[in-house]
Each structure stands twice: as C-alpha cells, then as structure tokens.
Image (cartoon, rainbow, N blue to C red; front, side, top):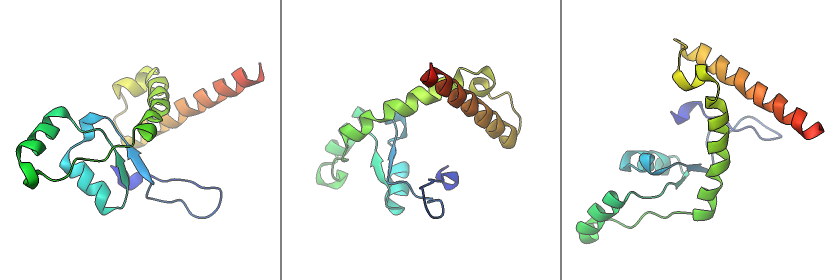
Amino acid sequence: MLEKVRIRLPLGRPRTRPGAVAADKAYSSRGNRTYLRKRNIKAVIPEKKDQAANRKKKGSGGGRPVSHDSDLYKERNTVERLINKLKAWRGIATRYDKTPESYLAGLHLRASMIWIDDLLKATE
C-alpha cells in the first residue's frame, strides 16, 4: 500500500518514505506497525483497547505500550475532511471504475475540482 506514496518537496526527487503515518485504530495491527518500524516511519496510531488488554495480560512478554503523539494525531482531521470531500463524488465513493488507472484519474479530477473551488472561494 505504501509503495506508491511519493512526497514532493520544493527541491530534489520525490521521497518515498514519509516521516510519520497517522491512521485510526483500525490500522493498529502488529503487522502494520512492524512494516512502518522496518522503514523507520513513525506510526501515529492509537492502540485498540482489546490489544492493550492482551498486551497487559501477557505481562512483561507483551512488550511495551505503543507510543502515541496525540498532537500529530489531531492533524489527521485535515486529511479526513479531504477524503470526505473526495467521497462526495459518487464515482469515488462507490468505486464504479473497473481499473486502478481510471479510479486514479477520477481522484485526480475530483481533487482538481476541489482545488479550483477553493481558489474561487479564496478570491471572493
């Protein structure tokens, strides 16, 4: 999933490794955290209550509690609002497109529409 992530800075080639990944509790699995740790990416994912209980039940063999940067996690709200704006377009929300290429083209089109709409609102 993260293989296609590209981060564009003002200069140089695109980076393929973000500094941190913020996700909700649905992505707090050991496998996701291990993958991010191997790539030296900070995981900003809260731990599920049942996972914390299982870890505590194992005692010292359960490992350390996961670290969680609550300030960085709060910034995830901005991304969630963008996703909601993207999904307001029915074709994206329902995945009518059969190929990944056409779905990505729809995402680009919808993102362009949002960008233009924001530009028009800013000039008013």
